[in-house]
Length: 183
Image 1: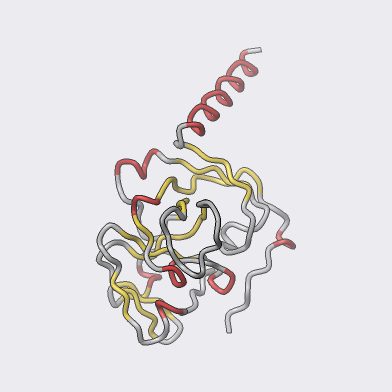
Image 2 (image 1 turned 90 degrees about the vertical axis):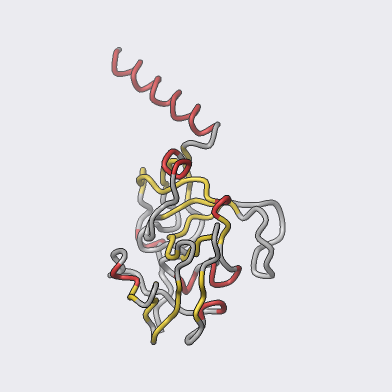
């Protein structure tokens, strides 16, 4: 009986925190973050830490597309995306060969990228250097060949960050996950 009461309290607390934007439950609709988060995975996110400080490079964040104007952003009301933060305000991003560099260092020196192979595109085409403006971050999908991200629509305003990945509650069968191969 006590376990049932505690479970009920936990669910009530989660629902209450979700209503005020402090937690989230997402069923991931696409493979832009594969292999870390795959289509069909269910993840829990938290909004407490992003209220008090900017997430770190390498953190996986949830954000809204509100106010993003780009031909690559689907029309309609704002939606939520989940992507990895690769560039902080003031960071210099560029591709050297096929390796993303942040402030002249390979991104792997900031966070583990052994399963991530970022692809240059648009705002980060080979040879271009992009400085992330103040009050903005640069986000990319781990499966960048299958990801709509800052390479298409530019740096993301910090005010759009809502939550940060917390944990998986369900991992979809990996047969659903089909990352786009690196060239």
